[in-house]
Length: 84
Image (cartoon, rainbow, N blue to C red; front, side):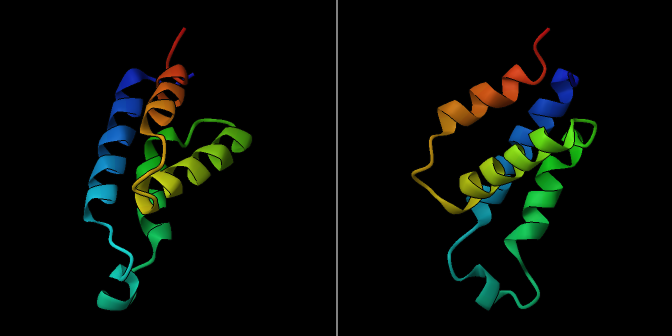
């Protein structure tokens, strides 16, 4: 379990990263990798078990790079991490 503030921070960071991402960003911004955005996004979730972090890394990457990814499922999963 994590604090709801951590899930809200994560959601905010994912939204910013997704909004500023574009397919040619790594070419346009030398040194940029989507991995740095993913790491920044999941930082508030660091206290979760490794298996959950791996799942969330994958989901966050999809949210950033795939504009058609299912955001509703992602938000529900993220919210479930803070439910009692």
